[in-house]
Length: 340
Image (cartoon, rainbow, N blue to C red):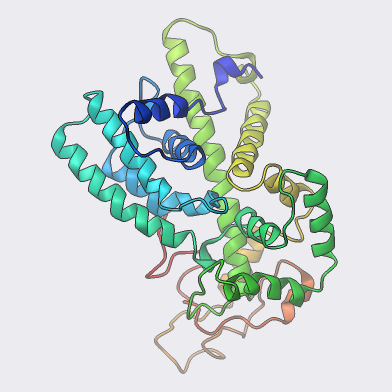
């Protein structure tokens, strides 16, 4: 693939923004959160001006309230408030570059501050993790060297040998240890939670791939306007282009969790990170009560009168949680869950 033309890999200006912050004697923002923020803003579909993502209230909300918790697992000792701080740093930089007026700067700074605090809380919610984020936490909890692919693979092999109920207990232990915040009323680590995690992971990866391709298309449109021909990869069959976008999406997902882990979970350990297909989702939705306010209808509030989806056959014995809202598909946001 001709990356100079396709530009699938984001080319953020992290180093330049860090240098500007130092020159302004500002408190530095860690490189990881800063790069993640710039990348996700760049892939969010907004305008890019001179290599910088254009900041709007919608873009900030989209990033901090709807997208960040899908992808990023902060490193140990890394302040989760750094993501909001990164947005504020970019806001001040864009004001200094005369791309924002003072009123807009003030509004964006306020929004980034409070939404950054919300984002830090969302990153701790047990019901909002994706599989790469969850397994990153499990690997860290067991002291696995994350920069050693062999060690990561060996741990996954050992985890696969555990009984399904032991794996569920390991997920729950992250809440007991205070690594994740327990969520009341959703039934905990049962079939509904597992389906939610699987759906969120699949959707997050798809959003990332689409963002990468849209970004590449914008760049190609600029090249086309200059009279440059389309790259060979886009001359007819788009399969190679889509495959390259999928590879880059996996790389980014790994950069924000554990390098190589998202690809391992999809290609070699899908039983440890199940993602439901359309038929499984439809079967699950079909067994949910249609009118939750009619307590007398259906088997019970838990919706146990239909077939449950489980990532593994052994999980079929697990009961569906009684508190799940039957009007929303698993993984859909509830009243207190961020909406995409």
